[in-house]
Length: 157
Image (cartoon, rainbow, N blue to C red):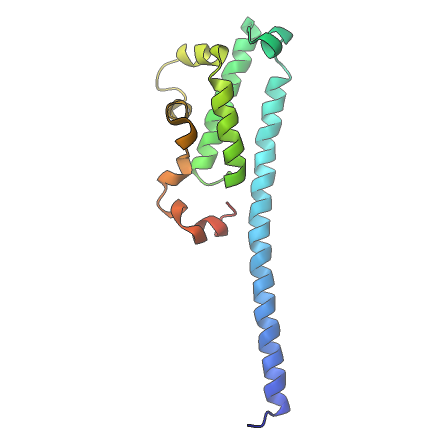
């Protein structure tokens, strides 16, 4: 079989197109993951803003002042927001593994549990569920598509 110059050029162009499509797909996946990281960084910043406002007694000994109770409620709301973001697929798997443990550990301390108990049962429902299920808790897995490997990769999770 003899190949004409047009056949060779066509094969080169098709190969270059295939490579370009692959690189573009990789860039989209990378961009999606980077957007998640930027979004997650906002929540980390909110966390440290709250924690930096705590009194020394609360930060060191876990004994909150009245002002610290406001901060504790802010943290409970932050946790609820983070869990909700995970539920809708805005928090990556690796970040969720870390956040889940941190959320459960910190909100299981007496000061945060007291604040959680002081509000109605309808407040912070996702956080309450996280505290019940602990290490098994992942609100994203309740979504049907979330268990699909391709869906997770396309969404940068």
